[in-house]
Image 1 (spheres, helix red, strand yellow):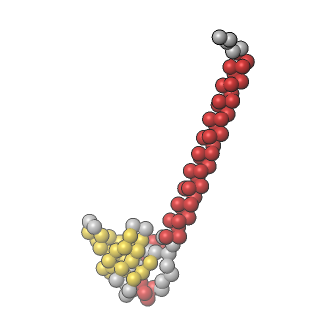
Image 2: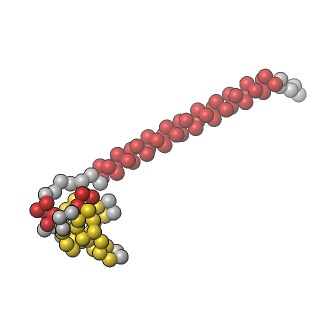
Image 3: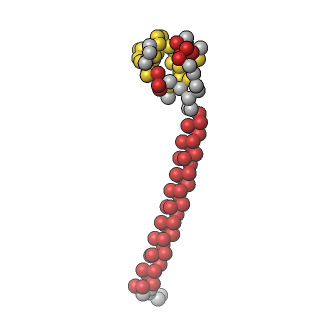
Length: 100
C-alpha cells in the first residue's frame, strides 16, 4: 500500500473542508429563506385592520398579538379585556382588529 505524502493529505483535507463549508452555507441560505418566508406569512396574517375610535368604543371583542379578547371597558388610552387569569388592560395602539 502506498502512503500519501503530506502535501497530498493536506490537499485532500482542504478539499473536504471546502465541501463541508459549501454544504453548511447552502443549508444556512435555505434556512434563512424559509425564515423570511414564514416572517412574511406571519406579517400578512397579523396585519392590523383599520378601525375608528367610535368602533372601538362600541366593540365587543378586540384582537391583539395574543388573540381575541372580550371587551369589558374602553378608556381613552387603554381597553380593559377579559383574560384567562383575570381582567387586564391593553393599550389601544396594540389592538389589531375590532369586532362590533
